[in-house]
Image 1 (cartoon, rainbow, N blue to C red):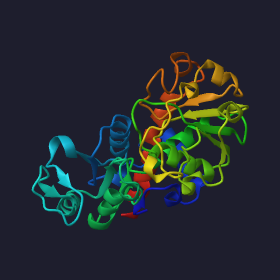
Image 2 (image 1 turned 60 degrees about the horizontal axis):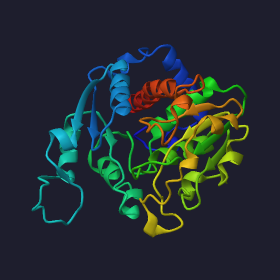
Image 3 (image 1 turned 90 degrees about the horizontal axis):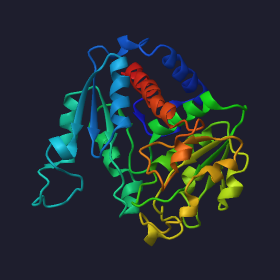
Length: 320
């Protein structure tokens, strides 16, 4: 595996899931694969779970790890071609990327959407430059449009906690005070479509995700109807994806607090489990009583980030 961006990159999902549980039972089983190998983690944006889980996964596999915070410990990088670099950006990404590639065997990249130019964001401009110019295997630690390590961990968590063979899984929009990218819901939708679940997406009208991620999911604008009989509720805010109106891309076009997941919302479910990728804004996305309830599995979900990343790095090490 030379790159990891989408669920299809893993191949047969059942084999990847089996591998995940094998690694969870023995996290150091494949430590020999990473001996004398180096992972470079490039962060254009802040991180807690991704930084810690990815570094831990690489160390479990015997790798050395270099972490670079582009906006805190390096020259500011220009990403556009054809510009006159007379501003505060001292180095171009097209020189920086191959230099980074000289010092490692594998690269993880985290770079969020700008939320001003949909075409630029959805072209995955930054990530694709790393894939093209680094000369190394590259995996996504969240990009402008996807967060596959999170979605893989979500699927592992659902497999662990499901009570029926084919659970009903609901992705619900919730209000937020800031404009957030669509990466997490995009990937969650993509991975749930690939899994054997009854998948429903619910959100206010106008917040439709890109059809390539929605896939065969059922879209329900009535949140209560969507929640009925659900085994898992995955709450997440996203800014307007601009699918129905490009001018709305990246904007907050609804702050409807009735979408906040509270005890009443969860009472509509089949004793459903609550999920969220974290960090979460309490009182906006979810109420205290829900996220602190026995049915909240946000911590085990976060812990599984180490496992999903271990599978991905293991696959890439085996391909070196």
